[in-house]
Image 1 (cartoon, rainbow over the protein chains, first blue to last red):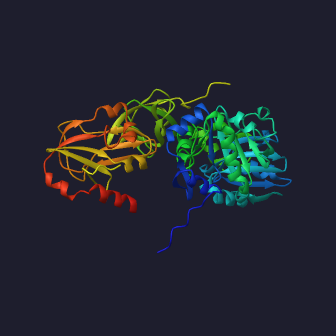
Image 2 (image 1 turned 135 degrees about the vertical axis):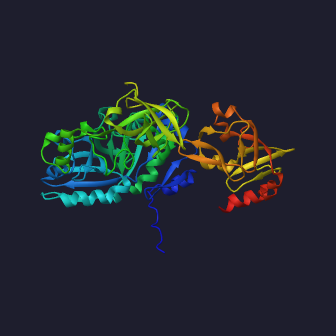
Length: 368
Length: 126
């Protein structure tokens, strides 16, 4: 029999284990799910500050005279509006309009784009971009050169500011700059996945363990906690952010996933445009919809959703919301039911449990 | 950690016998594997449970797990407090956070369960 492939590990794997992390196989990566309590880690991010190892995320860099043309063609978003030092949420699509992946585009310079992509899809993403490349642009797979830490929470700026000469208050949301953190070269971005203020730093893998420790020490006075993927999931769900493989995958399009704002059908040709134009003309038949449980039961990923007793969709992500103390989720529903205030039932272990559709996001932080 | 007078299952439940009434719960190992417990679904008083069959579920932030009856019988008491304070299952799984009490229909079933020493050996090697 063939041996299963060995799990991949980030440069911080031994650090996580030494800190008592509970490790799980996350899309082929050996990653911490928590360091004792998902709930405490979740609350630390909402109230204080957290530290996540997200080095499993992939990086793909596109350079050259026509780098813009390639990036603009393989994504549905308005890449032309990006200024150097600015980031944009986007996607890679198939010709049929389904997702290859969701990505962040960081424009470093007119001739250099830096893409941050999901861990389990990175090789597929790289092939997708290479196969579309008919420009004077070089596509490079650089995941091995970057570790990544995410530092979200109300005290994120004060924590990281102790370690860098870069004036962090000058970096606006979805912007970034290159600088130093604790003496190591770092790409410092105000991008994240939790609904809180946040910094993400892209750093050399050899510096990852030292910087992990430095951030923990800098954040100690604010009550920083190392956080695992369990809290990352509850935080992003409350913030209404999609997760690849759940809300978005090859069989759904950005128009169905409620990502119309990402999709610039008028920007010129891009992979998936014809399919999306057709879908836009006809109208989508189903849409991603947020819901809360009215019953005490917890809706989990994959559970069936009924409208008026009729099987109508499935839960893409569901679970408890530690901040709201309610059970929440996303599901795909026929467009007629895809609006707030519709009574639904989620089939929980064979029993229909009452829920109601609501407006997303579930959680929005108070303006600073 | 694991009381000597309890008996245990490989599915990580315990039973503590007093006369023909058995208190049933999940083990410390189980709560530790589950993480933060946020919801417990239990049968009602008067319902029958059968050894090895699911009689409810425990949900953590991440996942839902069946709980299996270590003994057969009829439920005579349910720990109602867990509905409001499921986190007690993380704090005191062998004591305050018992799940149900069952009037045993076949006390001989106890003999097939693991002793504290055997259970600890089992979780140590799994």
